[in-house]
Length: 296
Image (cartoon, rainbow, N blue to C red; front, top):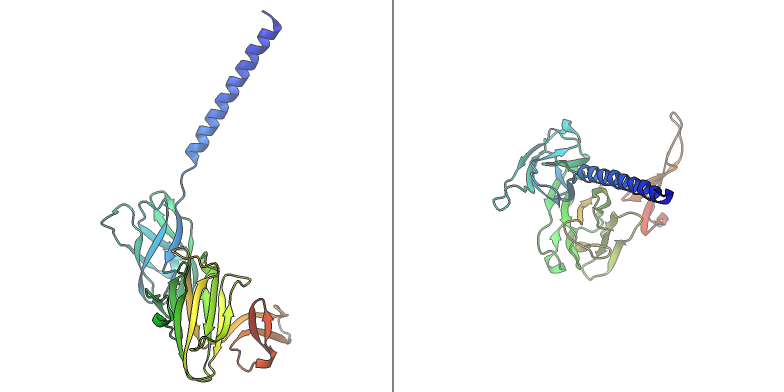
């Protein structure tokens, strides 16, 4: 037999063996890639401690979901699945009971599914009153009344604004905050605050993060209107937000951001509604006009 023929046979055997190894490796990898349950949205994205709330989830590979779990078992949150008669094997609604003593904060929420635990989504436990955004508040005429010290759990509407009304007395000061980034929301929160005549008072849009903050120092008695939207006017289940109105101070940052224990130093506070701040000393940080205050 010629050497060239022997070489061809050897090369053929080597290629066949290599093909077999690759086939086995590929089959093993295919079997190892089990789908991972994924939650794309949770609504509402938060609730008040001491209440029971119905939570809806949306995602992929959530078949057989039986329970929602928060990352801190010490909270003592209880969960009850709400069966769906149309899809008995695909539960997407749950009833969460949050104890009154649960510590406020942002926690990871998981769904227990047939394929295991899902990837987490943020869920906020608050200490104050919480409500759900009403349907149809997409015009100023149907603006929802925003109450002080209340959180509204809402969803950005595609190609439109959500409208809210604030009733204030002359001299009242409020801080309005829209949280989206903290929720892993796709929303780039935009807030525009106007008086009854439509004159713009404050705005926050396309800032360094996807949250937004505006302030109101009411020049006179009356109603003021707030427009809430995504910066690019996206919307849907993946665009949740938490909107709050408060009379409390709101701190953006402090400089210098650190101090030596046991020492006394001068620090500058930057934020909104800071007691004793000088209105003439506001500074522009990003797109936000912030009050400043020197403290020891």
